[in-house]
Image (cartoon, rainbow, N blue to C red):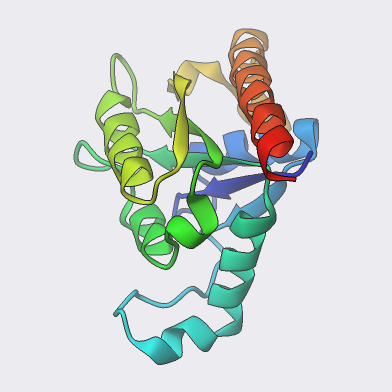
Length: 175
């Protein structure tokens, strides 16, 4: 089963990156890290689709059995970096593909608007955004070990379990 996680944070030291690296290490997901990416600003110009970075992004998502979108919440939405990356993708890569959503919030009840904005874009590219979603708060991170605390790791495991369930069903009907 091939999983891909997109770290939608433009910050190299952000919590979304910690969560994304944890998922990549723990579940063997391919990490697309927008904090180190040279993906250009989407302009909708045909020549952009020939760029190596864009071709690699499209190929990784198309070949994935399941995708995890991870983002910090910026101004009640997903990051501009993640939205920009998603603008290079379409139904060609996402139709019926299971997608899990993860938001990293500043605290309290943050993250829900970022999750909702990702879910809306997921519908726009015909992805099968799974029902389970997750928002992580700052106190759920193990900063010293670039990971998550036990409760957050358990929540991530439940998210990945549900994604795998949908990914197996996707594989059964597409392969």
